[in-house]
Image (cartoon, rainbow, N blue to C red):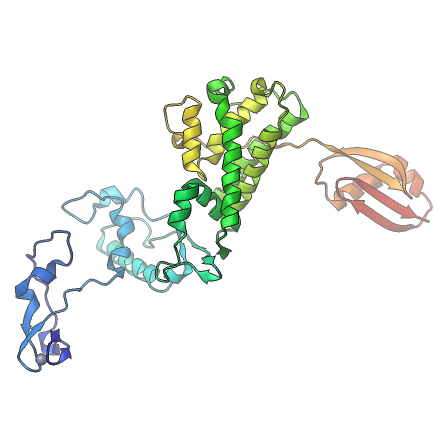
Length: 388
Ligand SMILES: [Zn+2]
């Protein structure tokens, strides 16, 4: 209670608990208790003069402890939520938040949820969140960006000037999400240029891209065509992998998207607008961009003549046939002279490369009766066996 004479005065133990009035009108504006004189106005326990009760009886953390259950039944006017509506979704598969929530919000949320569970208001596991991921902080001029520090300025202006897509791409690309990152205007400018390139290469194609279906690999008539389709499927594979493993390192997926847009931009101009591989990659590009640059992806999709949302389309399953890289020629030398050649995967490891070398009859003939001094492995190129 607040007394003009005594300041803040605790309610005497004998008067506890303070029971809240059951009939205050809830208008949605401010605290309903602050308008209820019968609750509010009390005699001061010290001086007996008029005092005023505290009307903020709800802790800041109260609603944040169970909002994720209410969100599943948000229009319910007669109850906080109904079990038959929330059970199919709960518990939460993945919680993403900053580590500053670990000791307060998450602790309270867990307490609330276990209470709901004990009461039979929710079913399933009695833990609210199946997995937790702590994202890193965004620094600006070396300081943590936060609403309370008032240094989040820049976000609204940047979004206004460069679009939300460029900002999202910048945030996703700068670092793995668990790391601290530094806000950088240059980084955002880089993403604006990326989106400009996407637009220039894809938008003029219009509905011509739809001549090439996305449910099977296109004809690939050149190394450039194979490289382009490989770059596309590498991007889809990266996105699928980062999601499936809950690693969320979409910065690597965005690096793959950079490579894809490079390959599209550099695709030989002559006849490219009718090359099946080029049209296929351009057709699929909005699907690959959709989770990361949702607005430009949707706009491109509509420029392609679609009337439904790109966000209702399926993620393309990465095709091993598209991802298979061409073989390289591994050269086996003895004392610097070529004695064998093998077609191998470009990323062949040293033990496999050496095993191939020692299994070759011609190489063995040149090693016969000599002492091995050195084995040299140059990844993707050669093995040299030095003997004396
Ligand atoms: Zn008083």
